[in-house]
Image: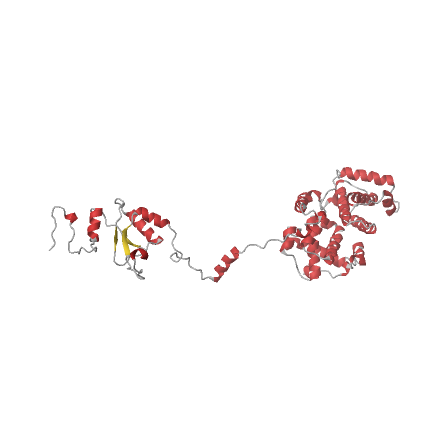
Length: 418
């Protein structure tokens, strides 16, 4: 029989336990003493190290006693916040015979547990998408773009290549390209000169340029000076050859190392003009152009785009053959020098390979897509087809020689016209 003191019912302790160290108080009595009528706190299980207990940890535990995880702790916190009573502050621990310790966890401890990262095995992974099309789209987004190959890395040790400045130079060329261009209909203001006379003059200058063995830059600068001068100055036809001759003289002074004498140019014109006339026209042309000789021509762009295309000698000759054919055509002035250069390289690639070819590297360095070059390149292919039978076939004869590897004899890219 158990006796108790009726004056203090909260201190009743059962005496039916033995005094051998196994005295245990009922959990309900302990919680009643500690909380004094408050809401019964949640009791969860906290694992005690097996070394301290001296027993082996049980593999299976009661479903009501689970180890603390992030998800379980968050559930406890959410339920605890919903409670309107005063938060719990005290803790109590009673060891059980199954190797676990029953612990009352406070809200502060649960917050600290919630901040701990959960084991990877306990975290839920996102569901795998079973749609193959959607999976492919996700994979394509993660693929990085292939970087563009640096075409100037091979010339790092070549001081003449100006690798340190080449990008800035071509950026500057693109900015001033529009300034150096002429209006595609400037011939409308000329009353005694027309497009056919211009073509005859340029063909003659190409032959003189080749006879004097001048550099290619000189030829392109000469044509540019002629068009810019005719745009600003009206001219009679008997002075047109003099303008072409003086433009070649100025281009030689700008580009060549060894400049032909004025008497040589007078002789080339079969003494049609005197030395005095040559010098007077030189002064007039320089004043009209305001001494602006540094302009980007199609030559500098062609060289750059050929380098991007990794062109061999055959492709290089064919590109310059097409662009020299374009110099005679007044209609080609509607295209910028950079577009003419890119179209010539594109048409040359199609002619050599027999199929359309304009890779990403060429598009990157030229800033022109294949569709943008199509109109200009088709006009060049037509000029290539008619070059042998045209009345002005000086360019065709020039590129039919062994010096230019008989480039003009190759078949044009007819499939582009289809």
